Image 1 (spheres, rainbow, N blue to C red):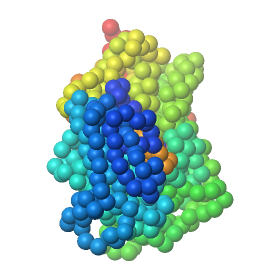
Image 2: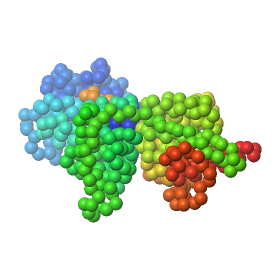
Image 3: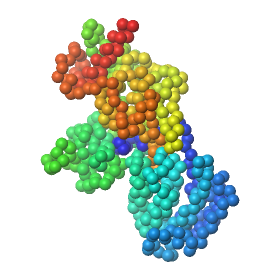
Image 4: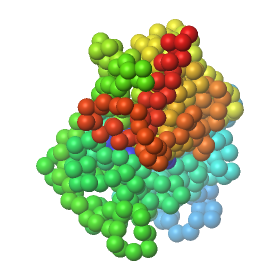
Length: 519
């Protein structure tokens, strides 16, 4: 499915189903399982709205019986907490685990909200907390007592009266993990997320991301032809306000949600060009109409050019914008079409591609690779490393390949670039990548919300660490290169002719082609 966690107003998923199923709680509420022997007695108006006896299934909880009177539970919860009503219903939950590493049961007591929507989010909190407990990549939970965190958050949630406020408490609890990629989104946000990863969207066409060092929301890129692109919004612009509301303290997911909306409506954004943070001269407001954004993840063209010996070559230029569910299929179709048109080399442009579904990245890699190559290595919370390999792959083409990357290339883009580079399939040209080497799983919770959890880290096939390091390309490209005399070119008036990285990539392809001819 999940800091860089770039958001589009579609919010492409930086989620990565990994090959190994990680352990999870056998149960976190009586709703999901038939009884065995782990029994908890709770009041009738308890969190789970069960009968007076809630039985929770767990093979690890045999012969365990937890019985708490209201007085005992209130005293347990009230330690260090002052002032919730003595008449409040109190729930005691026994949560049991089937992972051999956590063969234990845990009893947690907490006050139950009478506000129905808050009560629902309380159940969501237990569910999310349990998934974090079993799968989060850092087993120390950022060096804190994760069990006590549940009880503390439940008590803080008790006096609340709205679901939004309750979700904010869950987000606050997750923030203590020190991992911006582990987060929860509301049911409405999750529906938008799923639509975005399917490649359909009603919005303004912006990719946005929170810059980790400053906390500012910045524009990663715009969809070509979208309202944002037509308004002249550029990469690097800082998003300051949406409809007059300051974005201070707003994460990229919440901001993306504000940008989305029904086609035909509009949204006003305030931007800063980022060149002068001390004055107001760089600010501007833009009213953007929302439209149906067609999100083909791929744009392509054929670049003809002549080599030094006068031969005309065709280079297939393919720009991959994001890793949505149809990215690999679209890539395969594009390569087939270009092969039919006599393309002899390729440039795969991953610049400013913030990632998306890591599975899609792996599927795209398979289009270019043969055999049983390692695509990426994952490391779980216990430090166990497992490679993800191809299964008897057959590349669609063996033509020379250059991959373009920059500081906006992240997550699935880095996995793809690393797989192609470390297996000797491609030369990397551009600038060092962003450096997001974490993998998230996503779980839809009982209320329709979704929990994103960082469950593993990854290394490139050559065991290079990517997280907070990035991938350094083989060849840098800079604007200064445009000042050097270019070789004879013919790109039919394409704007690509002014792109220094394209020029460098073509040079590298010529070198590869000449080496191939010499051999």
